[in-house]
Every structure is written in C-alpha cells, then in structure tokens.
Length: 116
Length: 114
Image (cartoon, rainbow over all chains, first blue to last red; front, side, top):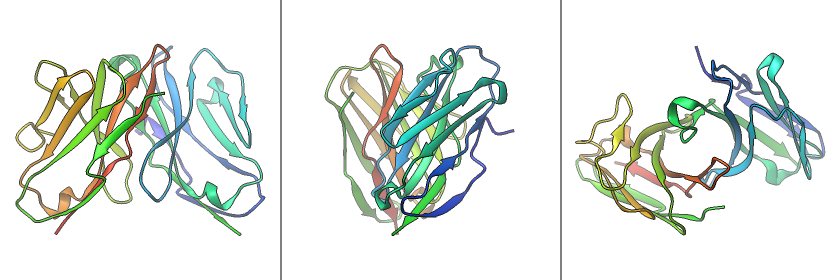
C-alpha cells in the first residue's frame, strides 16, 4: 500500500480558478511531518510547507492554503485564483521516525496545468 | 533555509561512461541524501551520504553503481557508474536543515544517457 497517495494525476484549470490538490497518507507513527513541494518544468524541487502531526491548524500563505485533517489522514493543498506560473508538478511527502525525520516518502505527484 | 548547488545541472552522457554529480551546501549540515527521479515518476531515495563513513544505500541501490563521497559537512558527490539509458533521470541532493526538520533539495542534475 502506498504511504502517500495523490490520487489526482493531472488537473487542468483556467487562470483565476481555485484548485485543490489532494494528499492522503498512511503511518503508524504518532509524530511525523508532512511536506508539499513544487516542481516546475526546470526540475528543481521547491519547498512549500512543512507541518508536524501535532499541529492541525490550517495554514494560509498568500494564495496558498493547506488543510491538515488527522481524522482522515489528509493534507490537502489549495491554490486560490490560480495563475499560469502555478503550472508545475506538486508533490506531497511524509517523513517518519524510522528515518529520524530526515528522509521523505513521496506521493506520485499531481501535475497542475493552468491555462490563460 | 539552505542554499544547495548541484553540478552539472544537465548533461548528455554516452552509454557505458560514468558521471560524478556534485552537491554543495552553503552551511554545515548533518544529514545529506541523494534521490533519483526517473522520467514522469516520483522521487526515490538512493542513499544517505554519511560524513566520514560509507554511504547507507536503500534497497535496490548498490555502491558499485552509485558510489557516494561525503568528505565534509557541506559537500557530497554521487557517481552514476557504467551508465545505461535506464539511468536517465534527475538526480537530486537533499539536506536536513535546522532545528525544524525541514528538508531542502538542490536544483537537480538532469542526466540523459544515449
């Protein structure tokens, strides 16, 4: 079974639409960290957010917001008023105690295409 | 945050040759790692680069194919040996930085084997 599931392979939206990228994770740890990264076509992996398992407060950063729900093991990412520059592959990832929280298990990624 | 530089950023390599990728961090870090991302796929951990000792490899990756060096706390290299087209991937260096357990990545090294 996958530890991090991003069920949406590809999402296409028109600029200014809101879009939510889903992430469901699986772990037996009580302490863990969840991450989102953005990978534009150039290939680099851009850190967006890190959330520890004890902090279920939703977070907003500009047009980005994250909804962490332990009850459903989900850590969803919403982009409000999407822009063409948001086009990228987005990865959700999990770090657990067995790696000392130093390595990541990635989902398969969601490719977001924002058209003008 | 950590600034992580990788060289080369891109390369086209001949089958059967070897290439060494460098990773330089702008501050001392305890933990450095190497990941591989095959075309259209997610990232997979290759190994942990240990300073002063041999790297720790994940299942499916071996030292003869992916030798790693970590001479100090800011630098590591990954060599992809005897390359085949299946080795065409983005190779990314990663570090665990700061007390907040945040994991950062370099810009990646995009290798194409022909």
